[in-house]
Image 1 (cartoon, rainbow, N blue to C red):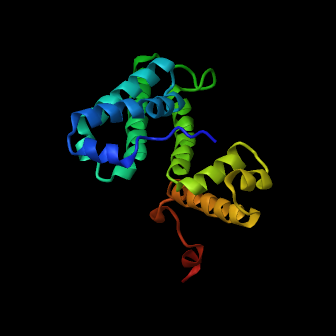
Image 2 (tube, helix red, strand yellow):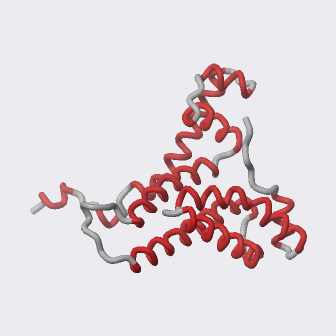
Image 3 (spheres, one colour):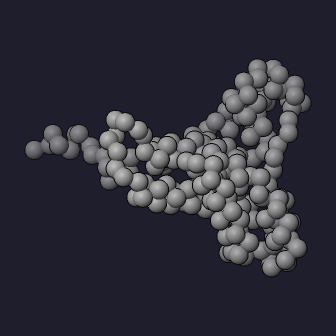
Length: 193
């Protein structure tokens, strides 16, 4: 299975240390992934191109501030997401108000895409073995036996990896799905005298 991956850790570490050739290679190697993020998150193709360029400029200028070399993908995703949101807000402010029933706002469209993007980021954060199983089984729809054979695993081993991958994705999305701790109350307390 072909996997478009991010530049390797050695290149990221060298770029963090200020090696100009490594920074250039890192920006170039990250470009396809950043463009893909932007296309999935921004409301228009033009905004996507602008957001991708802005993210790559930030990468070039601030790679030294990245704390963990393994966090490049999530860092770039956040930058692209924030840039797309900023552009959506700007576009919304510039437009004349329209009735809600006539057209959905660009911000609503972007927010829906961000939710999908959060799922994609959670999948991207999985260990490679789990990510491959999850994508082949749940995204591409291959049968369990086909996935196991393609990856050289037994069916029980494939099922175990798939379960761990699904659980990890659910755990990483849970903070955004559950209400904040202060938003819930205990009904039993309201019944006490």
